[in-house]
Length: 423
Image (tube, rainbow, N blue to C red):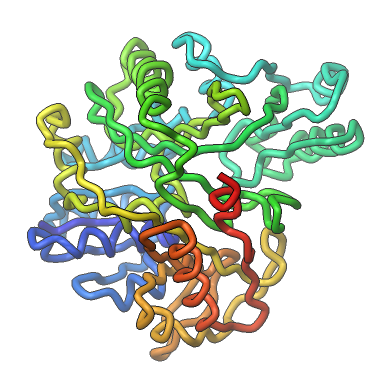
């Protein structure tokens, strides 16, 4: 098979690497890819931006691509899957209508309510003053309605923070087309990520993961795209997974079907598990999570292209149970100084080979290959991922590999997995 992976982050490096582990995959092309995919066996980069859908479609046709896997949400929201399907090219990822599950939080909230999916109470506003008048107590959650690269959610602990968040959204901090404001009640508990694959008829969850969104240790500070993740999380028991399947995944798929949406791809459910074991949906995403994908795919034992192809061929129900490796996988994100704000680029990275020699897998996120050297090219730079037989072993293995790597201004949280130690 020849497979095209769209995107340039850590998730896409993890997808490309996992696909190249299969004997049936002859080549993977990444658009545009990064420094990691540039050095990956059987893989090559093509410098096409993810938003350039006509060029990606043309590449897929010219290269006789058997399957396109779309990593980021932006091209999905722009309708890349629709254009590929029109050109008779298999694609794993929903069309523009299905991508509204992530591209519009208000649309997703309406769908949840129609499906009877448990979710936080809230309201949607276009008028910032009306939004401010709605708030009577804190903490409260303020969200930009559209795509915001994982940074458009603010947990306001004071009225001043809430008002500032509303003002920022309404003034276009997350884009002039992203000024609608979603306000939700604040829920107590632990967040869990459940990535589920679907062919539009059947839906199956992958192993549950937990990520760390805030920049600071102890889950403090502003939200990021994710500073680390681990899978599987013991917080989700077999009994709870059955409940997630019954109360969240299947009703959501049925609601999409009722709207005439043929959804083939990932439905990522961001869940809050309350202290008494109840679950609520915080958000949906329409693609693989990042950095959850790095942790989840390192545990996968079934060839990934078999799973994705079964979805594209609408025969997921016929696929045997997905196989998983034993143990725990943990990913630590190495970020540039200043992230999630402004950050420098072009810093030389050393020690990746030494980290890999310890058995860790170093997934590249914001990197470039320049004159044979890997340099920084983003806020989240690397995802150092390791497997252990136990929680403690996974944490130790990951951080031993982290300590091999260096670049100017490198920052990482030193407490990824701290909840596992508390469980």
